[in-house]
Image (cartoon, rainbow, N blue to C red; front, side):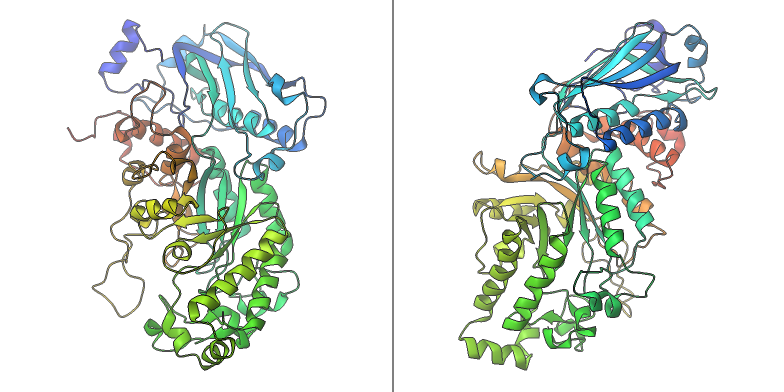
Length: 567
């Protein structure tokens, strides 16, 4: 990576207000930069070369990039916000064009971005190369072997540009060369719980926009839980009709397809979760015959949080109902992944449920054996339609359940549990509460408990999340089992009003961990010191795009790189 050497720029460095690399997030795994100012020409255009039929979603992505280059109006985070660049920009070289093209291996044909983004997790191709020259009238290039790769390149290209406050769009470290930038891990996600509190489609789309900015690849939609069932499922309309908070707080089938398409065209696959057999109390409002200990009290004896209620997993009728329910929604989705949940089962609920005890006695099974039968039915139904089951870690570590080696396990209770999952030969996604839970540290939400803290205290800062090591305690043989990770927002104390501020820019920390990996492009280890100025920049750019990301520090600090660090 080239460094600045001009006397003027060295003076700026001495003031602590110029960053040594572009404020790219996630930072590419390969990056070389110069020190030349280059501005966009008034006639700047983006063209696609060598593709006979450009997919519509790629055309739309190009259009969005062209708009953002002019509308972001994001100024550099230096004292004066880059005002001193204006004089030099008068004589700066101009960039006339950006061309997108496929590598020879692609064969000249290209699938839509959405088709590439929703492929099997192990078969996605996101790599790209980018060049931006420092010569006047030069042409920038992005090359990739897929539309998804071209899209990732466009995302990087957008982050190279700033506004000088007079309408000039410019970059300040040309030439730029990024070679074969690709993610360290294919799964880079964010989970949103829309059951505890409802989030409108517009809120979810805004979240997807932010995710796309940082090259996240997976939206984990925890759409239902014990508190509400806001999802319209074909063939099961009564679940939402009786289980949603109101008729205005329901995701219709059209809404689901709208969200899935919006995500896919922005390089994001949607993993829907219907948590079973626990966390299903709300189903009792439409199907009481399938729920054990529905709203039993005291709830603490029957559930991890109110209201109590779990699917009667020992019942053949309930098992068939659940398999049919899951199939009905999963087959409408393009993703190959679907989560059946499986966390926080309460044994006492089943012990106290006379129907479950009768069913167990009739079948001659233990509760664990019944759970295995239930799981084989739901997972078998998913496999029959070409889907890969996803579960929470308890299904692998706490229960005697047979899981296919293709099953994806979400590690959430502790980061220390990933090694135990990998030791079983199961693929895993990191989502540990001790690093990645965004709701921690807000105090206890359960009433009549004034001295309590949240169960996962303390607050998980972006710096804490950024120190996470995805490969800790794993053997060389186990490392390929790690698909990536996600940060999660459980919404007991979240709603549309605080969605952006509680998630962004904190959730971007894992986006870089799982894209860039352990090393920065200069070979040094990733670290919070070099990350902070880039994350500041991302946050300010997000705000310019209507995402209400929270400030990381006083703006005085954001404009003076390193001035607010502890020595």
